Image (tube, rainbow, N blue to C red; front, side):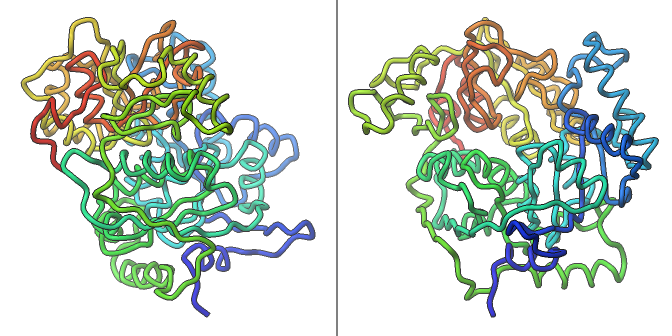
Length: 471
């Protein structure tokens, strides 16, 4: 019987079916960080338990670390206490910790892939919403809560209900200046922020076949913003080439065996899906959000929706969004003055993102009065950028080049918006208060579009500013 990758991985990791209809699922890899793990460690300590398979658990610190301070103690006493607690827990329970001193620290969804920990055909769990990122490798990766972090630490399993599978095909050729971020924002716009509820998203078609692993990660990362618990791309030679010789990838003969096993998890050509959606790549343009969720997005040259011309079911949410964003329905998004430009996050802070932006930023400068910060997703990304001189290009252009971390994506650290500042951001969420200020405003877009906004001081079409935007 033909199966999807989701079904194959699920079946391979199912321990037993529970009386409530859920499945006890074995978790191959558990990724943890400083925010959702302390309480979980405390609970298993109180129960006298150990970490069931410590060699399958990996930790890093990302959410709370300041990106403008290396020395400890941190000025934020809570952040300082949290990193020390994570160190203590990892030492006590024998968990590998990519601390700052290792040179491998960074955002958990960037560290896992670059270390070769994220592998096809596996199950991955992490106490973070954007764990779906790892699906880019053909893994089934779940974001979980603290109680489930406890369960996985104690048993290496968790209880979860089955998902339906929706195949999302994007075929054709993207126009110059259109990126992976535009593709996923367009998908969420069309299917809705709740459209994926109860589904795993399988991304396919020529666009995903030709995407780099970093581009696939950008798309899978935001699956959760479309309501899908899981998003993945079938593993192929691009996947294997990325994983080859990574620190935790199989070596020697074990590599060849692993590749053959990984290939077997790809969806069968005649697999049946619960739903199939098709998009034409040529119809996608640079996309930006105008509201307070990632689905409230438009092409850069469209106008902001108005309450009067919207469907009855959307009027309330549009009115709420317009009020918070201080926008008027019917006016263009292009030209909106920004206060802050942020390039970073687990969505868009990989080497490829900074390489692409640096091509257009070189020789230009951030507009007067704009605060612009660039935050590498990991210490390894930062070092790679340094070796290529990218950090200097950003600095000379007026960006603050920071240390690795989540930074302004979620503002659980000193990087926050002030008052009602408007931020052009390469991150993944534009919820009210997401970037630290209750009245702060976020417009999501690709990193190149953020760079265009930074140098002009307003929301801009990067294709016009940089003239030769190329994919």
